[in-house]
Image: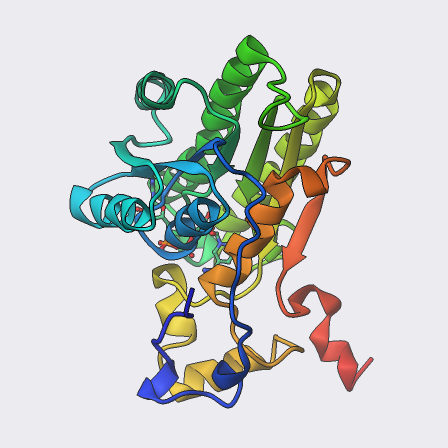
Length: 290
Ligand code: NAD
């Protein structure tokens, strides 16, 4: 898939020209996958990437249906199967209804990517309880609700050896901020730190059931959630101080990692976080200092 053509300042950076052509090996053919928050950004690229790798896809969205329907139509145009389902992942009834609808439509689910997330940034002393609860509710409780619903379905079905050696795969969209503290974003960093131990705890618990649970932790990816960090040349240059690999990540960089983790090629991997961050977690300030 070609990379997002949007570039800072409207002109290509030297690195945009070097992005690799993206191909998806057909490693998850016929496996139904559900991706939350799949109408934009990383979730959209992941839904399309999993479809390219052969999966049938539930495109979850919250809000306007049109962008999610568009993703589903793109998948169908590639010859895949897709359905868009509305659900607020922070609401138990919505998540229960979404999984019921997904299983009704595709028969089961093999892959669940808990990607939906948001930010409500604020200096700490001004952070409202509403801002705190909103971020924890979507980014952490939403992951709990979706992982629990996925677990119930995976255990109900068990291993279907025709499709995968595992009973199911859960992939949590975390962030480098599960590790890097982030001033002005205490709610967001707390939610992602919580995702890390949620993921590890349930990976340990579910491994005997052949359910693999892993996280992908993106660095700075060019999506609507962080437009201010890349949409002007000044902001982009500032961002590059934090990225040793000296280019912003594209949604497809994340989608490819998710598709691989979801495949049997990654069968012995559970409880792991795969950082896809151009080296952002390598303490770039120490490249010249320290
Ligand atoms: P985005 O804003 O494009 O995507 C987030 C999606 O989640 C949106 O489609 C939004 O509608 C959906 N969403 C929000 N609340 C929801 C809810 N209650 N129920 C269902 N869907 C809901 O931004 P993105 O960058 O693609 O973010 C996707 C994930 O990646 C998030 O979890 C984010 O924390 C994580 N992430 C992004 C970056 C980055 O640099 N872009 C870095 C690290 C982690």
